[in-house]
Length: 319
Ligand code: XMP
Image (cartoon, rainbow, N blue to C red; front, side, top):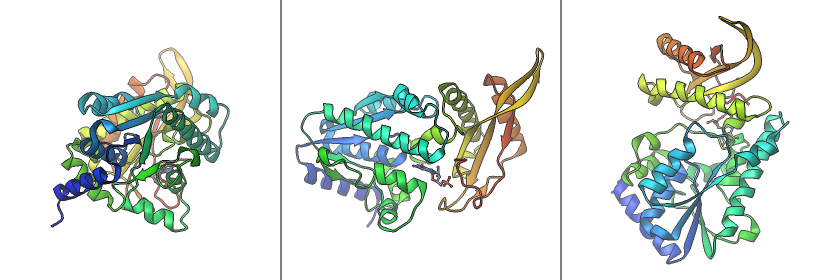
């Protein structure tokens, strides 16, 4: 019978069979799929696994530290953290077009990942968190933004000179099976049921040109929103929720006068397949707490708005 326990045992046996005593490299993003692969491979082959975690400076608040804490400190997984914030921001300077930003972020990710991979000796396998829906998507002619990125990061985007064999232990699993497997392997519930986070990260949630001050502001606002959603029990009732940095200047008034400052938009959606989505009807009281906390705790923000657009026509992300 199918149980998460059997799936785990079977996957562990298959990985051991495939890689023997060889070394395996994994790009760890902190998302559900690559995290489950990390936990699985660590259990299957221990020290033969090395993970590379690329911090592109466009991650959520404390994300890099949390990933290192969970995998390196708590689980004893070998994780190399590549702090590449400066490189990403440098290459993104002056670029406002969303697709151009996506390309730069995707390309820079590969450059940084390859540079780290090249430093490792005798690695023969590359592990990836490809899941069954990714396989289907790549086989079809679907053109979604997520697909474009996944084609780089997840399915067969292996640079020729790296000549490694792929290890894809989740290739036959649906998302709910991947989650069940993650729990079985001891990953915390909170991480296994995380909302999806796009590859380009805050790069497509800071509209227009990306800058460090904007990323820092957005991170703090986003963190407050997610914290309040969790507190109110709404996180698990939404499929994706996040803050967006709008580079328009709106007027704010305080004791010392009028200021012109950027706007923070909050977005929370409910969806089954992410192809269509409804905006989440969050309670006014919850929105009120978020708005007050954000303007009080995040310097440089004096206006917060809530996005009430469905998909279609509005996409889930703002870029
Ligand atoms: P949209 O905005 O197209 O998003 O309604 C649908 C889902 O895809 C995610 N998304 C991306 N994921 N790279 C990714 O890995 C991307 O460039 C990208 N753009 C959108 C989005 O977060 C949502 O879950």
